[in-house]
Image (cartoon, rainbow, N blue to C red; front, top):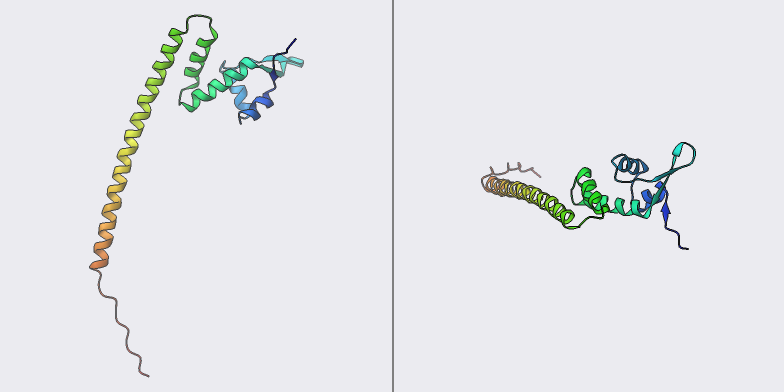
Length: 144
């Protein structure tokens, strides 16, 4: 009988390059739901489902989604309902995020254009100042 894999908090933290504190934060946010064992439930045992949810959470973060948006979408996939509403919600969130990124990109492009204009202006002033610079003082001839 095959057993399903389980993970400790350290296993997943190491695999995904996270701190155990971050793992506990994701648990507090409801993204992960490890089984609690040991005295006072101090030991956490994560399932393959938790591992997948963590992977999806980190992917959502890379896409720029908030943790609450990530949780909402991931929770939708846990339900056995039709996937149509889940996919529409995901597309809505992605479209909103894409618009934000496009706005940021436009702002960055405007900033770059301004920096380039200042660079051209500074180079022109520098070239002008070199051409119109006062002649260097002449040294007095030393008698030999």
